[in-house]
Image 1: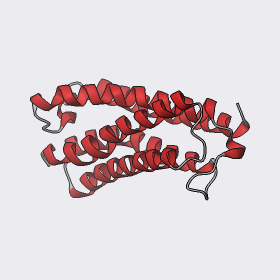
Image 2: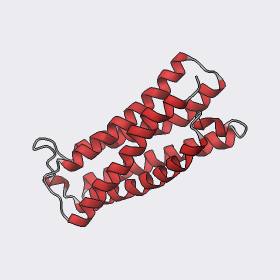
Image 3: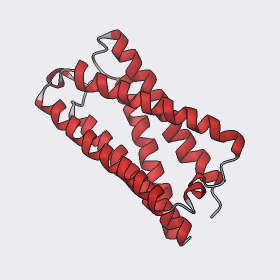
Image 4: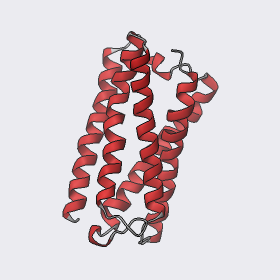
Length: 178
């Protein structure tokens, strides 16, 4: 593992821990309103959401594996222009807002207001757009080897995009009762 990959792994571990901690804290400190975090998503759509969440999580591991263990950062070229550092920016924009979403959502549930709703929507938009950027980045990489790991990474990024850029960024807010 190259130094750049070790640094990215550190970002992923720290950011991932913050995301998981925000969810645990949110659910433990808001037991009576935790189901309200669904925001009005109809019961018939919840199985789709849960399935998509699981596929997105598996997808995260697939693209993380490819980026961390299959790429040589010194040789990475994205869109014939950018280097490995792009992954740092993308993961920061995925992880930081993801860690903020749950606290902002519970704050919005406790004290509804336009400012909090805007903050919730902004966090979802940032994560969704960054996940699209990740998929585009993978599709424009100069290297696609090993092929199996690359295909798994692209498929995983597509599943992650479905969850974050479609279901979270667009569908969930449409059902949220503000």
